[in-house]
Length: 77
View 1 (cartoon, rainbow, N blue to C red):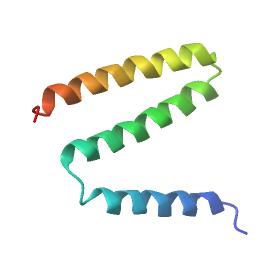
View 2 (spheres, rainbow, N blue to C red):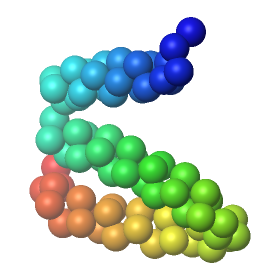
View 3 (cartoon, rainbow, N blue to C red):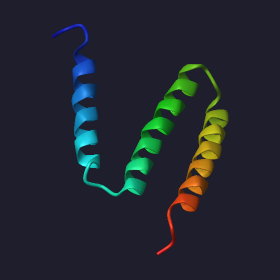
View 4 (cartoon, rainbow, N blue to C red):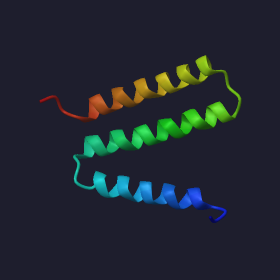
């Protein structure tokens, strides 16, 4: 087993996610990007030692802003 075995798995998963997203509508691709970004932010804040309620509130605020922006960008059908 190599020293950086986990990196190869993350790269393969990222490539798979990118290939799958190519055929999706723009709004869905943006939501997937937002999900990946929020997950990374959650991990980063947790690793920095923030308390779980503070982390959850920060992610909820950012998610609300993201949903608001998406709602303004996508026309209602």
